[in-house]
Image (cartoon, helix red, strand yellow):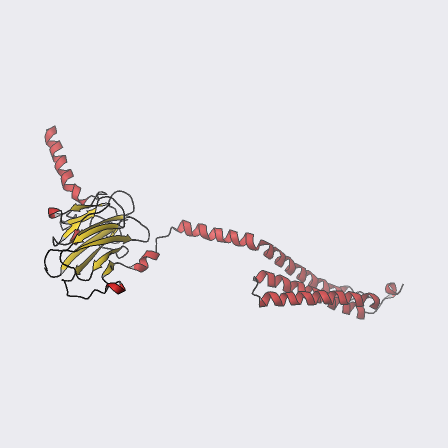
Length: 321
């Protein structure tokens, strides 16, 4: 009974194995029973937004592809995967048995008669070679599937994949201009704009916002303080002027011998501050600096006004003693 149970478990593991993501290379058939190189890595992304379907978020590209092949010639292909969040993944490339595909570093032979190549370990930027057939067999079709993974060492809804089909034309059917670098080309599939739109954690966004507020406070704290103080002083001056005129009998008398030098000093100070305010506005200085200089210029001009008003006030008996 125990041996029968073990046999059943062993068979179940063998049946499940093809649908489990393998970091040492994908299975030849996917979880749907189709060829992985044609039907894609359907065990990846299941349960996620794409639910096992190809995703344009993964840009699969292959470079070094000739427009047409030369009989018996060898070509080096470079396979790359791009994704906004993931840097590594896997691939499988097949030429449908036409010509010879040869694996390179990080890749291995797979498929019927080892006619295809796939990754041998999770990575990116694989170089494989293809040797064209020894005679003209017409155009040669290729299929390339690549997936970008989240590094969880198993297929899950976070993984994304895409598939690319292309062909190389028969010998002498196209013009390759080596001088302009057009003999080989790069072919890709996917949405390049998606590479710049990664999922952002709301907590990270909030942390950045709070950091910006803190930086702004520490950078402009002095400006906010002095600007607020200036507003309070202006309000106090206006209030004092009102109560002085209404309840205090008006401004105090100031003798002309004191008023003239005081008016000159305050006038020079006011003119200097007014010029500084104009420079700050013209030079596009931070608004806090311009505001503070403007308030100080108004304060100095108010001082000139007070000097003139006090010089014109009628003296009382205490002022004449």
